[in-house]
Amino acid sequence: TFGSPLSPLTDTELQIELVRQLGRPAVLVASSAVGAVGRTLQSLDSLEKYGVVPVGVALVGPRDEYAEAEIGKHRPG
Image (cartoon, rainbow, N blue to C red; front, side):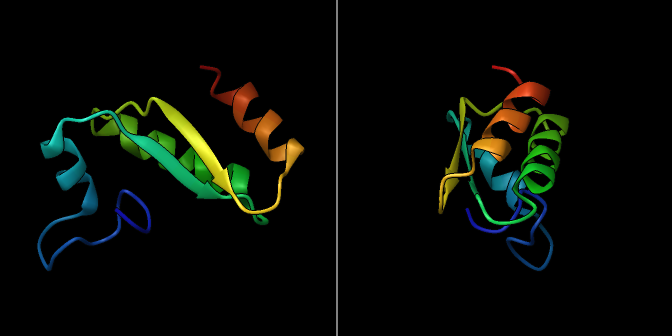
């Protein structure tokens, strides 16, 4: 999907509902731009709240070692 897990999919459902119904392993793809740590951790929390535990996280864009380290520190896996 695109946006965040809590972005609208339709007029009545959020994207997380599609992800849950698919029942497949999920990979969270997030931007490495400014704010990457907060946005990524919030998205991971949202996914887990709805019972979806991603098998990985991929940051897209210029490499940000700080963001990688902080996300790994707060969400080791």
